[in-house]
Length: 287
Image (tube, rainbow, N blue to C red; front, top):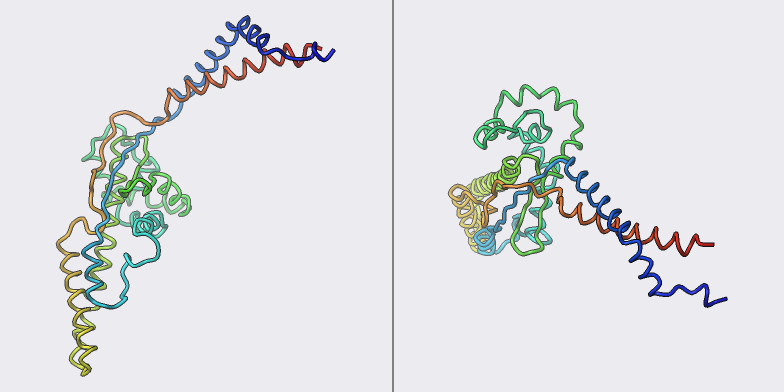
């Protein structure tokens, strides 16, 4: 009685071989359905840039001052981690939205399908475009806008260089998103360091003649020297914080969805489902 209920491995293989046409048909059909579904999805282009964090000069300037004065490179955690948090922050998005029309283009308010890079960049900084959609944007939730901006790019620091990838249905926009992020990040820290250095220089210049203690005079002189170097650097260096190792590019073909992945996934799922259906019909339902 027990022997009759045992399932023989060779018997299973024999049964599957007999039903091979059904297995192939189900697998091919499901694979085709998955592939056809992938054709209906919106194509996404991915552009990428690799960057170097410029911190050596600034760090050495701070060390020369012998003071723990504020600088973003002295924040807790990694420099790349701090920059990532800054780029993903709502404050940074607000800054980008005030200086560019990036969110308007991300919302597809303007048709850029047949435009070249120069024309899209013109829309990006157009005051007339900003005025045209001002009321429309004011009716949208700020957090929803930030969420759209946040989902348009990702940052990867796991492989060594500071890498940013952007996603968009327009290949040119995928490149422009990266350029705006890098440009505005450099501009923000450049402007901030420039202002802090000028304020520090003005203060030390006023207070230094009043101080009679030699040690404090020497310390303030070191700080003044460091701040002067920072001020010079912020005015002559274009790639102030982030420098391109590999510049953003216009992708030639869409990266997502992967039609091969959909096809192979459908075939594999169809294979498992057909095998399960055939075996369950024979052994689970035979009584």
